[in-house]
Amino acid sequence: MRAVIALIAMLSSLLLFLCLLWLTADGSLSTRSWEEETKSATDITPKGLRKLRSPLTSVQLATQTENRTTHKNAIYQLQLASKCKEMQDYIWSSSIKKKRLELASCCDAVHNFIASQNNTALGSNMSYEVDNKKTLLITEDIFRMLPESPPLLDYPFKHCAVVGNGGILKNSSCGAEIDKSDFVFRCNLPPTTGSVSKDVGNKTNLVTVNPSIIAQKYNKLNEKKVTFLENIASYGNAFLLLPAFSFKSNTAASFKVYHTLQEFRAKQKAIFFHPRYLKSLAQFWRTKGVKAYRLSSGFMIASAAIELCENVKLYGFWPFSKTTEEMPISHHYYDNQLPKPGFHAMPKEYNQILQLHGKGIVKLQFGKCDSD
Image (cartoon, rainbow, N blue to C red; front, side):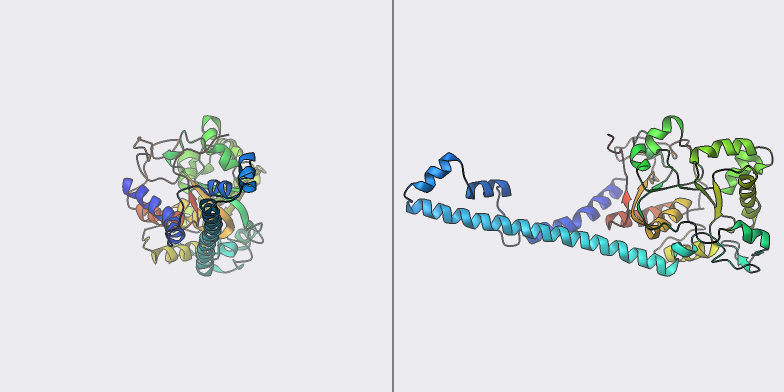
């Protein structure tokens, strides 16, 4: 874990270090502050005015000349610092644009993230993401379930929060900061009410739903529809995003969620990942070394957010059993249920997230948030 923190610090400070080398390259960086140098060179106190009215000795002349030179050096160094900051902002901005263009060229979340009538033809055979040898005929009934156009057309959102479920969120006091975001993504129907809201917030614009939760917790919505609707009420009018076209076994459960929301006229709307987007995304990250049976929901959403948002901050992304202060934490902020081994490539995913953080493409929250 210490190696991870060291990597983060190195990536974050490398550019600043190069700037400092630039500022000190001529060896003229003063040990006094810029404010001190300016005050010395432009002294308008009574004592300073008396000095100006007195005949100048050769020593005083030399001192004033030195002060003027120091003042010029201070201004020059300030200008260089400003240019360095501009360069840093430009590099980070260029990195974000480059990664956004990379993802857009391969995956195009703007148009392909969500299955819609615009990107899914009536009467076509849709190939499943993972069960790719199997197809699903897009009948008129299925076609009507899809939104006419991609539902996230208000992009780019200014500030987005992608909230993972890591135990590091517990006692983080990040709730208020998360709720200030313009768009909040969550994963797998996590709890957001009660005492946890102080740490994770309440606002939800989109939340993913693993069909296994529908099967195990709500008996495939055969008997527990009311309980399900009561539990998701905390998400307001959020989108419920389901992988209906990832595995053939996911289709029925995902469609059942859609029909249940329609039946009870719920505020929430069921939408579905487009399998073409998920296939392209998996291929993109495979070229970066993330080879897994399937990407995690959090990594999928973080990838989409890079395209859909100007600024992305990740919370609760921490796949370790201890905090940065070596304090033990649970796997999730609400339980300690571990994932199935071998299903996701979590270490490799996290390595990519650290790189994105180091380049300023996303911001990663590691500990407690500043609370007002």
